[in-house]
Image (cartoon, rainbow over all chains, first blue to last red; front, side, top):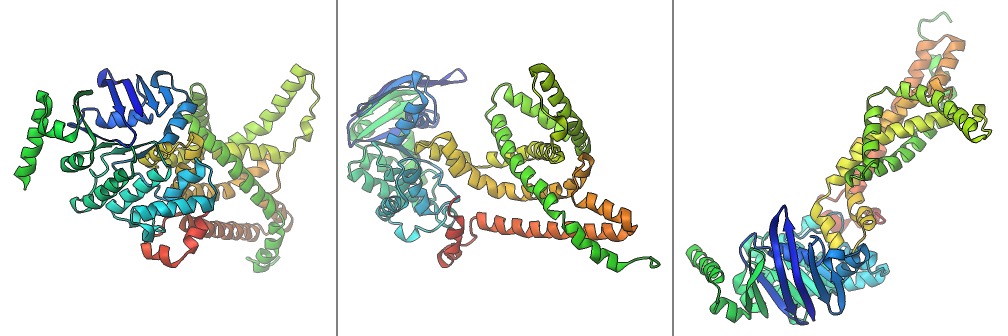
Length: 250
Length: 251
């Protein structure tokens, strides 16, 4: 069980996260939706301290941290127990796909080279890229790079996987392969929080949807509840606009 | 001595000059290594904006860049003995000022000179590394030092090699000033030889050739390093030649 309580963050006097509290069961796939600037990415990044929250408490299956008093040691420990997939992949450009996945295992988990290589290869196999293990990121397509990013995160066996708009930087053609990989990961029971604009995918894969607006959770529930029976005006408006634009484009 | 130009004097002075080549190389290599260590330290201090230290480093770099190296050599050559005298007086110690080897003055001056110039190069190179990759490394649970060593430095190195190479070549030629502190390196030796055989042009020509050849060798080494540390251009090269990954191991 993962519990976030009273998470707040402001930046230059603007409240980005306004006293957020969420409870996540093991194996949950939580999707964060909302317009840009709603605080979705900041929320995700505050959970592993890439963004320093002003206050709030996180209970990660018993490992507790208070963000207002977090120590360096706690921050490293927190990051070891979580993993992140980034919008722009952020692969280490000077290392091959295999070495990207091995990096955390060797340096953070202190595994020897053979052990790390074995796990890394298994992970690459999982995302369907074992034949690209020795390619450098710049020789891979965006979709392949993101799958390596997912393999790198999963290799760390995180208690919580954070995905920050994993398909937003991809060509439409390449979105599918990454979504497939995420879906497959969700099916293994991996607990994750996903920020995404792919509403139909969210509907399909999420066990819980949070709709954020101005740093607050204004709608929370199963995909069916949030998408088909939203109660707040803001969520109704957002979904209405989203689906209108969607059909308008087609 | 009748000829206007004596080609033999050129060839005979080359081996005599080469006798002290190790001195020039020693100054170059030691100053560069010590200089790079301090340069990295200075760069990190300025990037992390550590109070007091950061300002001190800024002033120091400005001073080194704003004064000729020959003046800096004179300052250390005369300043270190003064400092020792002061220490002897204040703390009742008995350091022998005359026992300080001339080489030390030269190494201190060149090392700090290199540190000042190269710290700017290194700072720019470190900052050129994509911030997203640093965040990715942090999100895996790496400490700042691990991120620096595993992600930032290897990529910054590729960016920094060409300008640092220029600095190295400049340093090798700059060692010709070491004679003002009383160190006999190649240029000083050239002065001595030509002072006895009066074949000034021939000796200095020999000297010029040696510096030139040394520079060419350094350039080749740098080119090799640049190739070795950069990411291969085509995916095929990665598959065919395993030597790329072999050569890159350990960084």
